Each structure stands twice: as structure tokens, then as C-alpha cells.
Length: 169
Image 1 (cartoon, rainbow, N blue to C red):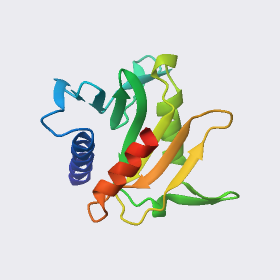
Image 2 (image 1 turned 90 degrees about the vertical axis):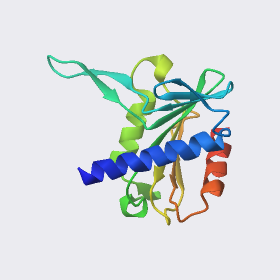
Image 3 (image 1 turned 135 degrees about the horizontal axis):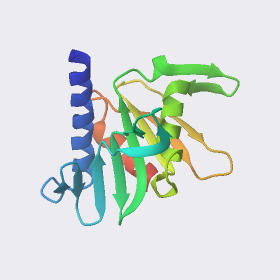
Image 4 (image 1 turned 180 degrees about the vertical axis):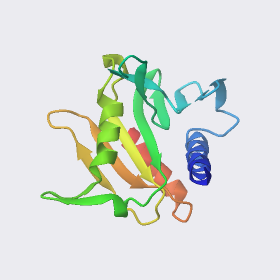
């Protein structure tokens, strides 16, 4: 229980930092319970989407990335925070080091599965780790990319947020 409470705290801390980076708190207005906007950008916390799979005899299977960012109603990116060290999650491959396949697959499912209108071209995984080395993977013959980065209070948070905003565009 303590882990899940702290993990939720990390995700809410990240939401707060992203909201601050997209406008002063007074400019970001709460639109719905989990959606904040400033007229141009919309930040949604714990966006929930179906992925075209269902439990046998049951309901839809959902993916819930931590944060969805839209600009003028167009989805720009999904962000998933991981309360773990990114470097400990690297696998050695023939192309060098890659993030753990479970984490890669989780983001690919959130980006590519489900109804076409819910597909996303950009995913960002932020590890609560002060030393994670940034890694980017891309889908063949596509503009889809997933960036694996660090977000830790001991790092220069403003610099990391600015880098993330450059990636998002």
C-alpha cells in the first residue's frame, strides 16, 4: 500500500510540474475533474482509453497513461511516469542498451491500440531517477517515437521540462 501511495504522489507531482510548465497556475483552469486547460493546451491526468481487447465474458481492457497533452484539440503526447530507476530497466540488445521490453510494450499498446482516433504519435516515459540516460526509439516507416528520460527532484527540473516541451513541440 505504501508503494502505491508514494507512486501516486510521484505522478501527481509530475502533473503539477507539467501544469506549471504550460502556464502559470492561475492560467491553467480545471475543465473537468482530471482535465486542465489554458485556452491552447489541455492536460489530462490519467487518460483512460480502450485498446480493442476485452476480458472473456467481461468488460473492455483499458490503458491509463498518466498524462495526455493536447494542443488546439490535437493530441501531442502521452506521458507515463515510472517510480523506478531507468538504468536498472535497460536491456542489452544487438543495437545497444534499450529500456525493458515490458515498459516499451506498455507504451506501444497505449499509443497504437484501440480506435484510430485515440492513437498517439509521441510517448514519453519519465523515470524517477537522477541518472537515467535518455533513449529514444521509433517505429519503422512512421513518425511515432517513444522517449525515455529522467525526472527527479535532484535534477534540474526546469531544464528537463524544457527538454520535454521541445520534444513535444
